[in-house]
Length: 336
Image (cartoon, rainbow, N blue to C red; front, side):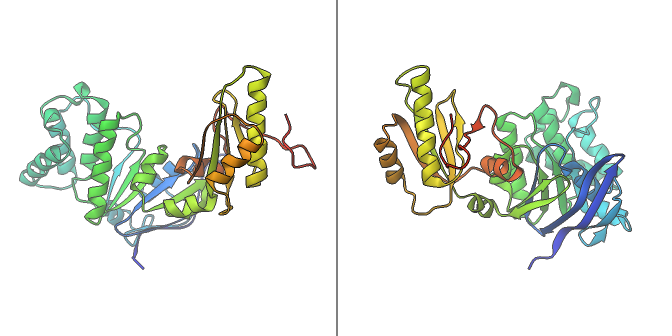
């Protein structure tokens, strides 16, 4: 089993009345990408700040590359790079001046700082930003500069706290490519993100944090397997008003009976979805049952869940503009 590059046990942290971490456990093997996910306020950024030696834990232990973050913070800092939620580059300096400054602050000699700066500007496609004040650069360029700065010392562990928030798809794709390259080269990456697709694309393992503690962990495939499959039906708009409502409710009744789980309805889009773990449920059977009940269907599908749906299920949240279709108490039937 690979040696843990990041290891926490029973990590607790309070900020006044707010209990940000409540016994967080992490185990990130060397050379892997770990996606740290959770709703807002779950404690993700607090965990990163503790691991980066920016905040001390109240109790518990945390080690990075074998070094305790409290007892030996200097050794931890020598082995890590950090890209926070907000760019740390100086807006009045050029891109090249920023990188050379960070390099010198990290103890690099002048010639080495210039060489490494030139290398990273080229790697991130930032030649245009080299001689421009950062205040004139786009948000995507600033984030790439920030990431480049965190890689100046070739860290063994890289902490990325929501590194692509607010970026356009092209800039996000560049950062994704960089993370993949770093992982292939052996860098350990701990990534927090609000983009579930990002974690699905990049993470070898995912840790779901909820209310300051480890809720669920596993590979993206393992987490999806825990949920099962999604049966989804789109009802035709053959009539307006009560007739259209009746079609959605009829489809919900069929899914309720076949899956044994409470369907989720979106009346505006005329969709009904439900989770199933029954391997005997096939798409042809679903279509036959809908047809037998006279449900006018535009589309029907049976598919694996997305990571977004896994996240919503495991955190107990519900998608916006949707609601669960309640059963009539004691009958198992759909209630209007």
